[in-house]
Length: 221
Image (spheres, rainbow, N blue to C red):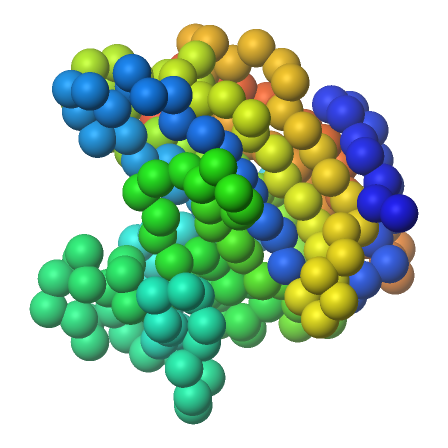
């Protein structure tokens, strides 16, 4: 049975290799004037709470990419290719997934809309490949171009959750339903994966920010 956690709670991770599914529903009236796009990112930080280099920020515009199908399935051979392989940014985001140099964290195919019937975006993580100097992996969600698109925020999003599950059995290990009030937030730190000696645990953060993705970058870069 899956462990359900709430803000501030932690749970041990028994899986070393797993998927992270994130879901949300964009309220119908939120897209009447402007598109509404949420993006998932992962900050791989060291003991100083900073990403060692830009390569350890896995997000929609990461320069290191893995070719993928529209459903997110990686295409063989699974190897890192440069973002310059694609003629446009839109094509790159639709046909590849971002990753770090070790392929420890593989980001999601970009999904500009939520999904009422399942995960909107999915990351794949292999803790065995995380470099020894990386202590935490913070998984965040931010609204793309929120200010320019009429001041969008998380009050226009409902039923947000994150789940960690075994990709083979599809069984959930940990679930965190975001029930906090993020009405004034434009970006949210959902959870962190934290190294504790030789093992890892997940902690529910639920930390909202009024700034866009750049505010998260400034915090951890």
